[in-house]
Length: 209
Image (cartoon, rainbow, N blue to C red; front, side, top):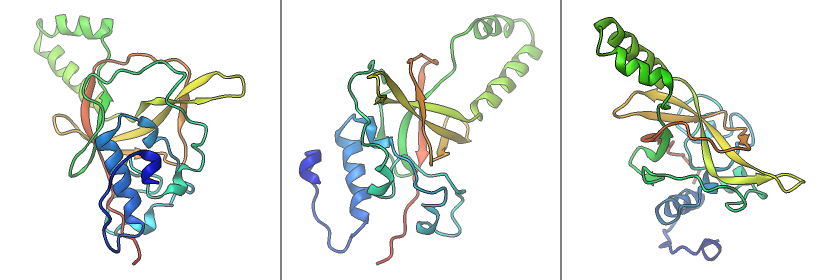
């Protein structure tokens, strides 16, 4: 498997299934291939047995890195070609101690935003209203479009979308992946505003020795 991915990893005695998580971490550090995150849980509670009972994670939620190879069983047709390139101006994906830093879609530049910026100079009430509006928007569930594509029988491609739930607000914004048994498809890339780096928390699996 290491030869397939063209990576070098130092063997560690007794790590068993843990090696797959370490392989993914290596790929995040050495590659920009976002199909690494295009997986689905085989069952909504597939990851629950591998984490601590005290862990604050619900069924059908996880991080960006899969628990095992079987979570990729539906990913055989996914490609990083044949679709428009999705820019990652904030630097793409990287590892942190808490999980994976990801470029999360920010606020769209709309007429409302421009008008709000003008109104904010006029009255304190407007400032309070706009601040409340953005705080609520920041905690809404969202979709993250990956730079990888699934073709249909006609050769058309659609970008893979995964679902995220915010857990805390900026500046130290954290999220979790939700609805992990599915992914969405988007046939047209659209800019949703400047991307902002945020942390998608990653569970620490407890494998049976």
